[in-house]
Image (cartoon, rainbow, N blue to C red; front, side, top):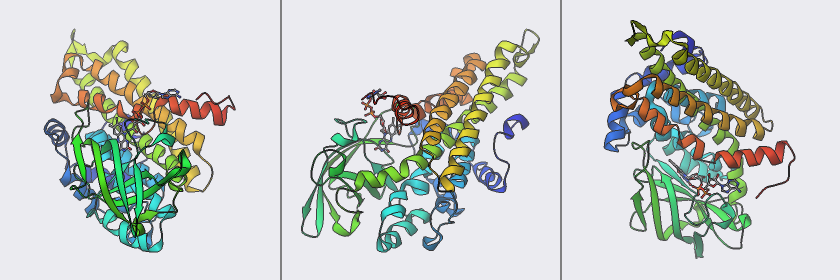
Length: 385
Ligand SMILES: Cc1cc2nc3c(=O)[nH]c(=O)nc-3n(C[C@H](O)[C@H](O)[C@H](O)COP(=O)(O)OP(=O)(O)OC[C@H]3O[C@@H](n4cnc5c(N)ncnc54)[C@H](O)[C@@H]3O)c2cc1C
């Protein structure tokens, strides 16, 4: 990695050790996983073996008890290694996905669910989005019907990432009543005899699957309901800000990875008798991309510091996710254009990162909904939807 880009990463021991781990998973590994739609199992195991999955989990259950800042550094370094969104998405759910259990689970639930997630023995997917409701979560249709000491869940979910390899599913379903107050949260074993899982063929991040789920009477014991009936959305809210911070961290790493590949190429490729990077038309878009990534990184770290010190961070976390996703996309676009024709060739990896850079602009929340949030909550403008 070049020295200028190096500085955009906090130069601490954690980042360095994650980079060392990622060095065993070079660009060819991620290129092949993407081409073959193959989940990066070895990588996920290596991250688990190094103890990083539990970075932000409580020490009492085998985690390290550190903050969102440390989790963000790990995800930024993973994406920045060239693993991109395939790398971060392979471990994101283990690192952070069970935050609702930490925040609202009983001692018994924490003791049962957290240790196998931290060790990597279990893998959970997160099932919120549905085909008919989109971002309007209050319109979710999947139903959880109480039947003695269990619930039976029936409905459809869409875009559920990692369901192909998941052992469990954190799922939001309606237990009664309309709107957000009718929703409850469950941690369900992913019983494939009750859930049909169909992979969606998508633009990028093919190593990590996203799926349509058809759920028919999936059994969940009552003791696997997280929080009270009707509290599901309120519990999820706890995790939204840290999730945005971690997605921002991944976007920044991904953008830096693309920038690194572009600057190496721009120094080496000679046309008209000199390196193409000597042309300001090539150098300036890369310099601008670095500036935007650095600004997004500062905002992301500020949001993480606010969250870790127990202060409100909604505006900063949302703005960080927005800025990071846009900066990442801009960096990837500049990288593809810097490589010219080779930018379009799979062999040079920037096209893979470019495809992956779209995800942060769409999920887990779209650009428009972030701007809606800032307009309403920060600028006190009328709610527009
Ligand atoms: C690769 C990938 C992985 C994903 N993984 C998961 C997962 O693991 N689990 C999960 O539950 N979901 C997952 N998702 C789903 C993701 O969270 C949603 O796609 C995202 O929240 C957008 O919802 P939607 O697609 O239903 O868009 P829609 O709600 O249909 O919206 C479509 C467009 O209209 C815009 N729009 C809608 N309403 C308004 C408004 N009032 N004002 C302005 N603009 C508006 C939106 O911003 C968006 O651009 C994933 C998506 C992708 C692409």
